Length: 183
Image (cartoon, rainbow, N blue to C red; front, side, top):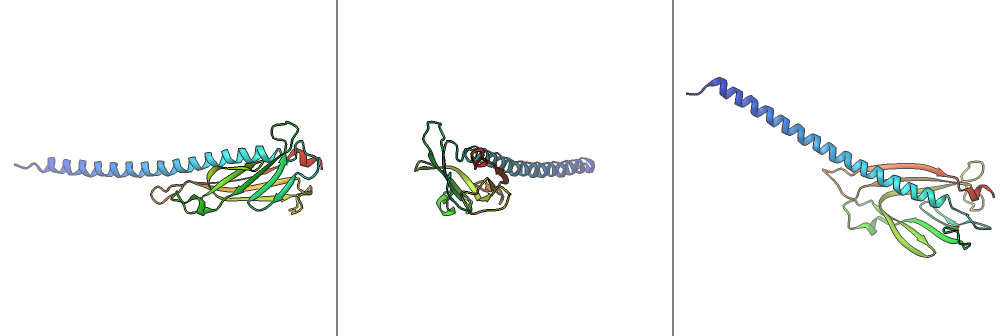
């Protein structure tokens, strides 16, 4: 008829398989969340590289004041980007969260880069961007002619959720444009 040992073996095997499936689901969920964080880290580093490169060019090939306007999340400056002897006007600004309404993340914004009045969005996912301006002594300044370095702080989040989680990464750095060190 029924073998109790065989039924017990099947029961234990079934419980074991269910436990393995549950562990597998948890591992897959953690891997996906970690993947979102890696995506966020790669994105914030790409944006930082671009900012460091362009901000490092502030004042290159320009005589006089290189910084035209400076704000918490926007900066406009002059630099001869293509080294053709003509100063280019470059602007970085963080857009509004409402402009990125096509994403699930209610806080993500576009980062805009404008060259000589032609602005385009170059990144989506920044939730904060903050510029801090320092003089030769390392003290914060609001005087564009006194700026010798610029601190950058930003946070990036993925545009879509997975199981209620967004990938997130922050970055902070400081750039010392060579042309501003001469002033």
